[in-house]
Image 1 (cartoon, helix red, strand yellow):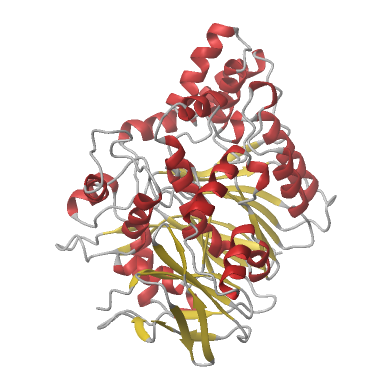
Image 2 (cartoon, rainbow, N blue to C red; image 1 turned 90 degrees about the horizontal axis):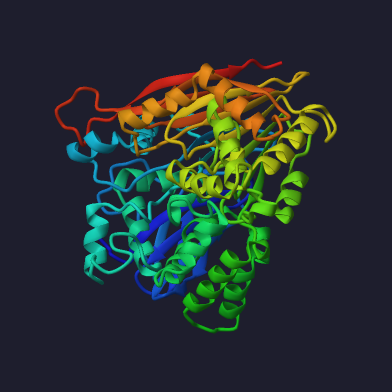
Length: 553
């Protein structure tokens, strides 16, 4: 096997006439993507001694399907020698097409053996890839939306810890957690290099947004959390490595060619390449990451895509938070204004990707709203200290724990559903992960627009029975009344929108697939299973766990 190809290829942004193919390679040079209708090249760029390329494949026909290969320095590196899986392909979008999209979140990078399967469950992404291989290609999704925790920087596997130990002592901070960009590069290899998942990422376009474990558990929970992190000697390298590697490995491929051309880092890289300048961009990325963390209003990680008559808005609900108790918001004013601009009518469907669920079980929603009020001083200073500890201990930091932002977004959604932002869509659906259980919630909205929350979590990181039982308890109707009463007593205004859980919860490792049908849509959740075979590694199949449908109108 030619070892020039370190990681990839990943098929990222694809539209009607173009596609982006991302790779990490061993040495600097030229990367070529070849298909039936042409060849396209890109020069590598370097960051902290690692070499990457994003090849822009252009001039394709709408609705076309082409197999492709990758060459580095004139040598074919993909497909790998002896590859028996289907050839990687680029399938461009068709004007006005319906959308078929997979989504999910929370996937730990672990071996696919009996021990890991027993502890964390079967990898649903790997099972999904195997199902694709045996299905007709025209049934494959157009896009996979990864909704956070693509990698776990704070909860590492034995393989990752072995790599860390080869560089530094595990007894020195941050111990078994990641420390810097170099360690992130190895974590991405563990996440994306397993052959079956690697094939899926090479042939299925993907879009991604981070959540807390991509950086650290409870990332940006509160102002106190940030102050505590700032005191740690290793934190600057961690946040810089996390955000810089996220830009390289995940965010760059989210962007359209036009958006990429305007990106502040990518435009510098392209200008330097055109001038014949060869340099390592690690220091530039580190400085950019530090600034984006300290001043999140200077860079936007959120993005929007229109596919046929469906708009997909993916919002960053982690890095752009306003955290001081006097003016808390899950997204800052600039991000909120941008988000509002994207919520337009005249689409059949509007999908809102946010790693954190917007609509939780009512008991949990009320509990989080109450926790925000207590931590902000509604019960006095002593209770505020205790409230902050409880918030962080049980992860009470979703949209419900940022009440004003929740109300503002809910109001905008009601405006969209009510026709005040253009022709109302058939559905407005929040797509989320994070909470390690899956469900569907539906809001009570007048008119023909259905407002939904669909959660698919985890892909691979199942909860234990005690945690699952606790979450089921929070969803119980009696508890929702109790927490609702306590929230009202603490002067938390009632939500401007009402909803109920209409399907779930379930706790399997899942991948969900959404398909539009005019102004209707269907969703299904599927889990990986061993099928009862003796070989726990190779026996994988999908079993449907749940479904949901809005009939076409």
